[in-house]
Image (cartoon, rainbow, N blue to C red; front, side):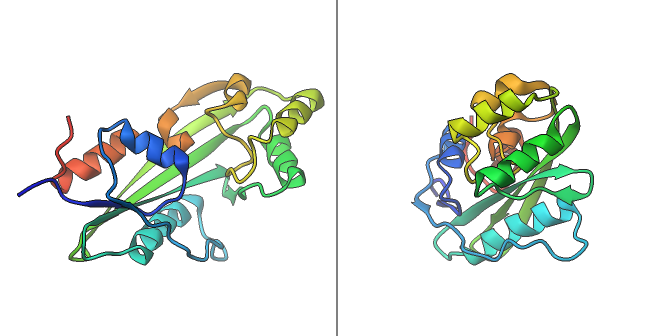
Length: 191
């Protein structure tokens, strides 16, 4: 029997690039379209896991395994939004300036028979204290668009981060160590 088929439930080019680093090529890309509104009082880690699970379920297929992920930026118990406008990105960056926050990257792997496996990666990130000029310059770059917490660690923001404890790939959007372990446990051949 050959390698199982994998469907990636994400339109994110970053997730496609990251999974390729494991030597895995999805047979299909099937982004899940679900309501991503946090439930009242929902904690960030519970929200991240629920989103990954619901995305995997929404993209379910009898033709193969479905891998879905969700990345949540949390300041305390507060879930920061995906920045869709510069004002939201500015508020996120001002909140994160000079303080630690957590990035929770959850992944879920749904088997064709419906069995669900999931993992959660938690990374602590510390931004330097950001000046208004640094925030303005970052906003002008446009990298924040559509990014959880208003920043992309794989770009200019990396130069504003003084410390990271955990998974860099998890902050980008797909924790490779956890993804590799999940895929291997499902029978995927990975070096």
